[in-house]
Image (cartoon, rainbow, N blue to C red; front, side, top):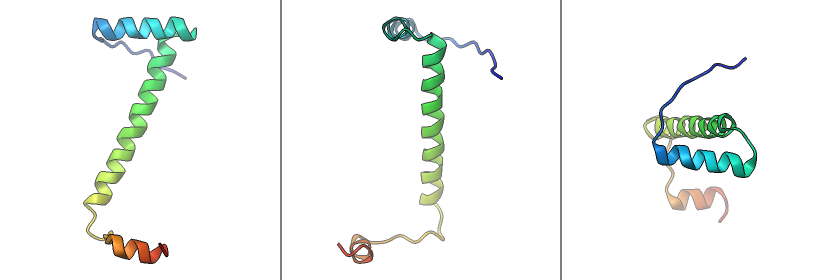
Length: 72
């Protein structure tokens, strides 16, 4: 199931969205949905990285240790 959502975007962004929709023969909704999926994935990845960065139980390896571990 899907939900309708209303958003306001700047005029220049709306014009670009219209152009891309015409060029690709895809709806504006399709492109907005794909962009939002990508954004949400990136935000999730960023949160994981942030959490790991601040996890004191997660060991930090030096470059020398990393090379030794992977026989480089």
